[in-house]
Length: 143
Image 1: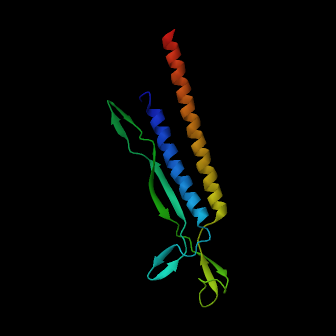
Image 2: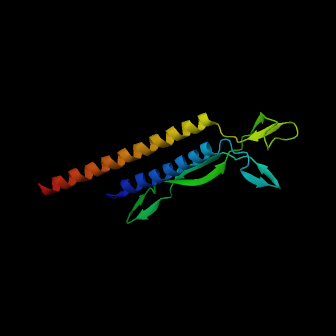
Image 3: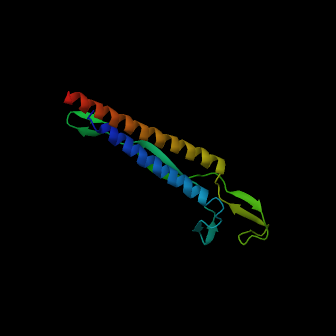
């Protein structure tokens, strides 16, 4: 493993967790959006999105195989059913007075956001620890 590989691994994790936080933010922002996409001529509510993370492929560096870090494999839509709310005065209510609301659960989103934030903070701490070790190594070399 090279001297800067840990920076690369932490940097890929920071990028992946930032995208995860962006996805959660979009879910929270659209938690009440009843017209998310047009399907077969009818408006469907916003559908919750989730990030799927995976280890980045190994890369060859000289004679060592080094982990590529973390990457977002894909962003998938949650297949949970939409929520129904009775509101006959709503412009998107059906003939029975029910409105389909997004399948976004704010509690789940906050838990996902906290997890992504903690992972982001842990990778910042790992980068700072690596930086401190490299600085100490250079100080040893001076003496």
